[in-house]
Each structure stands twice: as C-alpha cells, then as structure tokens.
Image 1 (tube, protein in one colour):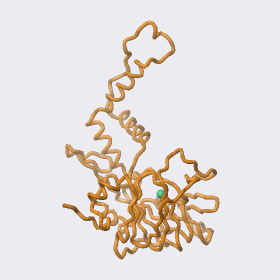
Image 2 (cartoon, rainbow, N blue to C red):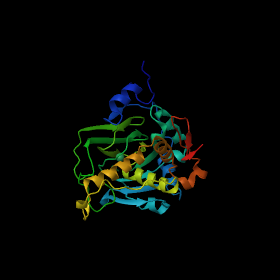
Image 3 (tube, protein in one colour):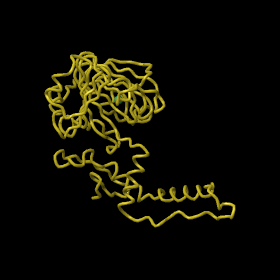
Image 4 (cartoon, rainbow, N blue to C red):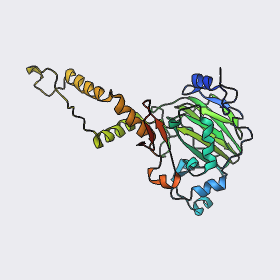
Length: 309
Ligand SMILES: [Mn+2]
C-alpha cells in the first residue's frame, strides 16, 4: 500500500525515499497547489534589519557577500538587478513559514535544519554551486530558472576572490523554470544554479548534515566535559628493534583499536548524537524564538534542544 504525501505530487513517499532521497533530483510541479508565499519581499527585508536574524546579501557584480543585519540604506544602495537577499531560519520568526515544515512529514524530523527564504531581483542568483546537504527549493512568488549539473566536490575549482564558493565550471544537464508552488529536490553535491526571472522568492528547506570533523569535535567536547574515559593508549608487544623514532604499524593498530573501541558504545553515541542533532540553531535566542527540536532514542529517552528529558 502506498501513501501519497501532499507535497510529492504523484510520487509516493516510498518511491521518493527509495528512488530519489539522497540519490537524484526531482522536479515536482505544483507541489503546493495555489501556493501563496507566506512572506513577501518587504517583510523579508524587514527581518534582515533585525539584529537577531541571520541574513546575507549577494551582489553578482564581483560576487560581493555582505552579512546582516542591514539598514534601510543598504537596500537603497543596491543595484536595480542581479542581487539576492538570503534570510536563514525564517521558520523560527514567521509561524506561517514554519507551517510549511509540516509537509515534510515523510522524513525524520530531527534531520530538518531550517527554511531559508531568498528574494532575488531580476537576474539575481548566488552563482552555480553545490551544497553538502539535501534541499527542497520551493518557489514562492515569481519565477526562477533552475539549472542543474552533475555531482561536484571539494576538488572542483571555484571562482577566486570571493567568499562564495562558486563553481568555475558549470555544465547544465537539465533546466526548468519554476513557478509559485513548484518544487525542486536536490540531493547533496548536485551542482545547481538558480536565476530569477523578474523578482522572485524561493523557500529552501534544508537538512542537517554535519561533517565528520564537526561531529568528532562535538563528541570530543562532550567527552571532555562529562564522563572520564579511563582508557589510555597502551603499547603493543615491544621488541628492542622498536627503540627508535619510528611509529610501528603495531602502535598505529593500538591507536585505531582504542579509538574504535571508544566509539563502539551504543549508549554513548546515542545520547551524544541525540543531543547534537537537537541542538538549537540559535541557542542564545531560544527564549525569543521558542525553537524546539526533539529526538527520541530507541530506548525511549527523549531529547529536546539537546537536553535529556
Ligand atoms: Mn544551494
């Protein structure tokens, strides 16, 4: 029996998860019928004036990147076209935007990161690039042409002299013009380039995909602050021939064994991971945003905003 989710068009949840999720792009026309963007360009610009709100402006000329909060003067000084305003986590500030998240009930809820809303003037884009996370690009007001390329990675050359990671080489293999309510799903690392046709807004539903280095950093911090791990590195059987500066493969095997044994602890990993994935996006602002993230471990221990219940 298949279960049609209202936002996946005529694709069932099962089919989407098996065939597309983290595998290949999917265009869904009319994902939300008669979609009226729950925030308009002026309201979005208003949010970007607020100190607590994370926002950026990208101007295509020289790919300038500015970080908010902005002022009325910032907006007055922008060119007539080819710029983009991006506001992060609008779901935390606008309840009507947060309501969109309910439509993504076919995915683990703790994987959801936020809804970024972008406004682009005519011709505006942030350049061809790729992300390391899954994203659903839901078209708000106006139209945007999305082009997608193949898989990219850190080895792909990027445009110099800008903070933005724009791909130097982008070969579109497919393109669509999205209209209000249309949605494009992109798995991680697919190159993409969206250019506004006239003014438009786009709602990007992004997912949490921490890098291994970030996870190890957080886990190490957690270990340092909490339970003492009594195990220290011990030597493999030594021989006089090892009394030199070389690190033997046997020593490396001991290091590896100790680290793997430390990680091979379901309770430790489960509790750390649940806390980590439910950490508030803006921990200092939880009183204002009411941000609430919950995950439940298989043993039914529940975590909300990183704290055990
Ligand atoms: Mn992107």
